Amino acid sequence: MDPRQSVGEPASAPASEPVAVDAVVIGAGPVGLFQVFELGLLDIRAHVVDALPHLGGQPAELYPDKPIYDIPGLPVCTGQGLVEALHTQCSPFSPTFHLGQTVRQLEWQTDGRFLVGTSKNTRLLARTVFIAAGVGAFEPRRLGVEGLDAFENTQLFFRAGDAGALDGRQALIVGDDDQAIECALSLSEGSSGRPAGVTLMHRRDSFRAEPQRVARMRERCGQGAMRFVAGQITGFKTQDQRLSSVDVAQPDGATAKIPVDTLLVLQGLSPRLGPVAGWGLAMERKQLVVDTATYSTSEPGIFAVGDINSYPGKRKLLVCGFHEATLAAYAAAPIVHPDRPVLLQYTTTSTQLHQLLQVKSASK
Image 1: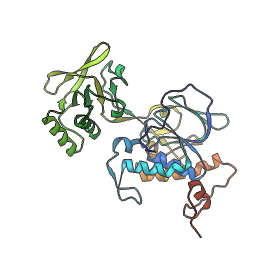
Image 2: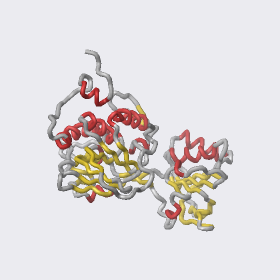
Image 3: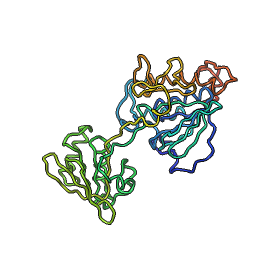
Image 4: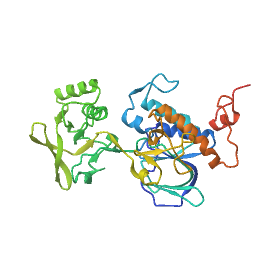
């Protein structure tokens, strides 16, 4: 399965009896996915919750095509390539993904388990919880124009793929990164089904995108296939209760009116710590304090790995998060399987691990 494919529930469902699970991992980024793998090696099955509609967290959303050079054994890989590899690695353990939803409820139960509830009414009763939420749940950066959000999911979109077919429409794309410019280029270069007009807007005539993409954009503007407008949206007009145009304040003080059928706001994502701050866990500078022997938070049974945690000497590197996930999994094993000894086994030689990984053991 493509990790960028949505796996979560498409819509909210009525609240039901919670499902009993071994572990809930909050966050489907690289560290969260590796947490699933390390838990799987200890025969701990995981459910994973993430606010994004696809796997991968920050690397998949913010720099899927950018090279990463500090993953052990991989001289270079892209953010998306790393996510795909981690997804493949943990897939033998059949994790259940609940995507496009955030954890709103985390409550300790009298039997020692934790009730986890999400924004889509998913309810899980977990023996252990692993918070791998990075710097928080990523939410799209909005425009801050009062009343504009009323058109969300009909004419206002924060992901290019959500807008559907734009044939014959006036499309306005707001943003200055690779995603925004690539979206505008793709719309302007379509051989069929092209919008009636494609406008790219950013508050100034400079961009974070790769120079090659910016050059292609300027070339298309010169050919009249699309246009670029420097400015910021300050208001909007409607016709028949639909968004019809936006008012734009330009850098020279002038104002402009741009017709709009579909508005794509691709200004990147902003992390929000969200409900984590209200769960009663010890925190320091908006990060969860952990014991570095187990990566447990102040609440036994709840662990924190990756950028969400804090301890002396902490480094926000993926390789550190992978180490943290390993120790957290071993610390969770006695909680999930109290009657089993926690053995250190090697994937090279252990027939038990080979069975869990669904691979054939090497001949002796």
